[in-house]
Length: 447
Image (cartoon, rainbow, N blue to C red; front, side, top):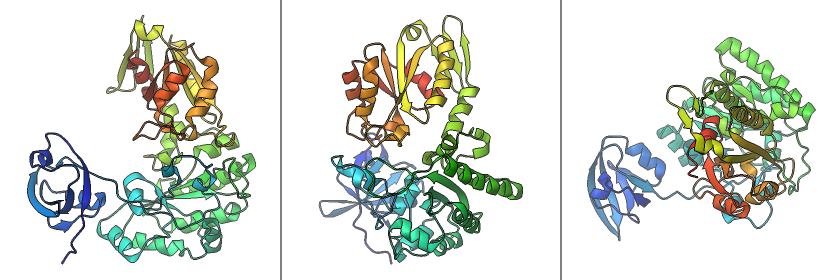
């Protein structure tokens, strides 16, 4: 017999939905679906898969039973409380943050549910028997896992956790349950590189085909770090890529799948051209900085521009954008991190040649330090500082959404994207950081 659940609190109910018509309201709690207890969003998603749902809702200590028809009842649950990390990783980015930021930035997430839902990386160091049983029972696959090294002594030193379990045993258990895994190795020179990197990839390969992918990512170090870690330099990046490419060649020959990938930043640090987008398959670790530059370049290459007083851009049959005289009279500007600037400038130059007045500015990261070069870690203040010299010379600022916390449209330093526009005396809009996103921002900027 299933234990009685305390339920999952309801945050919102979509107007006109089956739940709304049945009288379900924010503040109620979903106790069970089709007789199965619900404690969080994953339980709810797992048990509501059927077209009709027998839902128990709790309100003011009373239970109400409802029959809802339709695959989407229209219920949005409040976020569950996140399990936090028990480790003290030598490269932990949260521990490299300065004081004074919003509290949520200091939460060190280590929750297998967030890994399943959003692709967050976990170390598997805080999983209890009930967590492992639930992963198997509900088929929470794929999971995204930080391994770093399969040498237990090295890994535990990197995690700052002497009692961390043997990672290969944990991963082998997932393989037995047929749970797919995407793994990352944060490369720290002098610790898990060279022969240790080869050993780790070799060990992980034993998990194939439930090993979906392995990414090798250079350690990110801010100016506020207290550890003595050495950053990944050009020679380190080159050696790591040689290792990655040797395994790729072997795996492609045997499986038609490279399995292991180097992060875009490794290629940039090594001063080497990035692989074509076709080498990344379905981009299994795109959010981890693997393949994004190649995907952007591929989309830009496919873009077709036609100018006849207006400009028409197409990215295939379904994506067609038209810019009229009004848009072509306006002056646009966007920004990016230092590492991506050369690739974005190449695309923007193509737009300028077609008659679109647009500039792109590389923003140096003063907040975290110059070694942090990605767009997603820029602060609003650094954007204002960099673009202030250009203030008044543009009509529309295109802000890439990767620099913002999506739920609130704010930068890491709590500045709202509209605050940037007000400070620079320019209208600001948020765009997808893709060739199509840039053009849609120009076409639909609302000025």
